[in-house]
Image 1 (cartoon, helix red, strand yellow):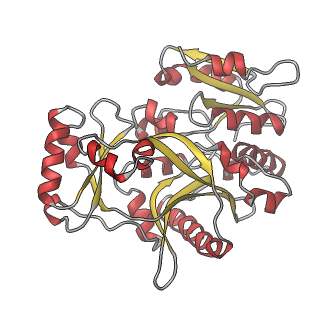
Image 2 (cartoon, one colour; image 1 turned 45 degrees about the horizontal axis):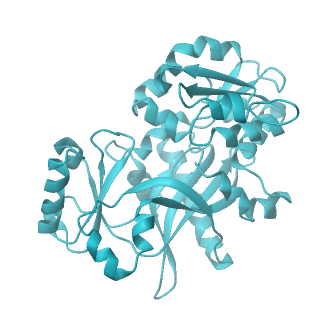
Length: 364
């Protein structure tokens, strides 16, 4: 392992998703910070949150023509003694080329880079294999449209924006075919995308993302916070009275992420949530040695009884979450005495690994 110390190490992140969270946390723990931004999106990092006069958190900002050009500046990152923190945008703007991420991106990365690909449902093993291994409940899935016998949510990759999904609902095979045909005609999806779509039952309940952190250094699982997503254009639709919603029947419902909101859960739900987190950790260790490292989220729906409330996991994020607002929930404060952003928890883990000379246990 390269000689990383607090003084000579730079924490770097792609300028999107959770970059400011990463940088603030790294600065608070004494590291230098670097953001790789795309032209036209750089002012947030090289102006508004630039380090100056005792404020800000971005020490250096590299502006590229395209995010994907990060592969061309690896020499620069190596000279900065960089530890890279991956987020979802890093995967998306490298066109979800996980072989490139695993084999050609040579910068030491916090976490297990070989776990990132489980977010892609069309690849195997994927998050559903991991959830099955962990015996974690997720929505019932249907192999083909002809099997649909209840209200289902269909998740299909958009035609143009490969990092977004075009969602639609269907209650039976005929409904599926009608809506899929419309989206194909509008060129919002492709036949190939439809072939790889996930068809799953619609689960009705309360959306909660359980944002965990697993430390290989202490072998402990921590719940750092809970949040929920706010998405377009579903947010506007659900706030309309029912008689007006009828006028929007032909509108395509979009679940494009726009913001996050901090939420809390009943303490009676914490034991079940931790049980899911522990099971996920063990399953990840079995399928993707050495398993999960650092932050991960189980995006869930809490459903009613009988016999009692339960948690259904609808999505998995095996890396930095996109919601710095989770620090507004009390769970990290219960552990540490004050709220802690995920970015700072990551920086603390790196710092501790340096002291223990165990960086090889948290980097890949």
